[in-house]
Image (cartoon, rainbow, N blue to C red; front, side, top):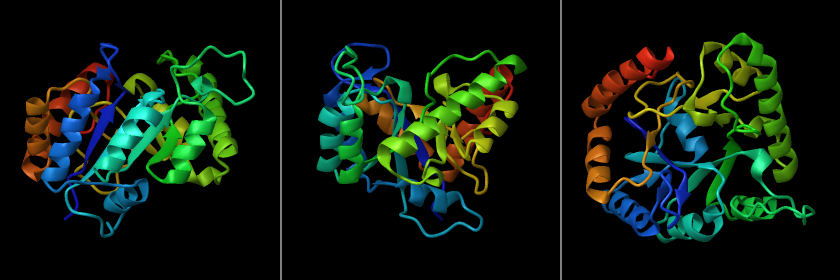
Length: 259
């Protein structure tokens, strides 16, 4: 049995002290502990197999390592750390924040460039998927639906063009700010983004469901607390308990959750 699968979420891996930052040494301790406990990182194909109907064989104690926004540390901190521990990751890019080679006037050095994205993808250490084009905090009312549809389509178009991969490859979406509703899920599916990730403590425990996939935010979590969370989420009973508690809280606050 491959499930449960914990999906870990990180943003910045740097010394900025930002609320969404993790110190590189702390990140290394997270990876070292996962490796010592026999966890194996999953590729997106592995993950898709784990929740397919019927599920197909995947590594036991699998974990999906994800990184949101596309900060520049992906190239100089995250990728080297993943290589050292024999792991791979998935980066959800804000396509509007990535710098093109011909954009010499850009002062945005906080996010990876498309040249860096292509190099990392070619190396195989990080896969890239959509985190929208603009990363807006959209209004939950129906009036925003056309804007959301256009934004997600732009994101997939740009990823397809910049990485020279088939459009169908880009099937995973991390919703900006972890926010979505049922109508947005349909918009995402219409854009080909059939696997949709939110932010919620828990782990994937059910086959077939590809929306509201829970990701536990690990930004800045001290190593002992990280170990406690992962120990709980790696057991079916612990994962189900977490999903019930935090999925219910999220459903109460936002109208939906993975429970």
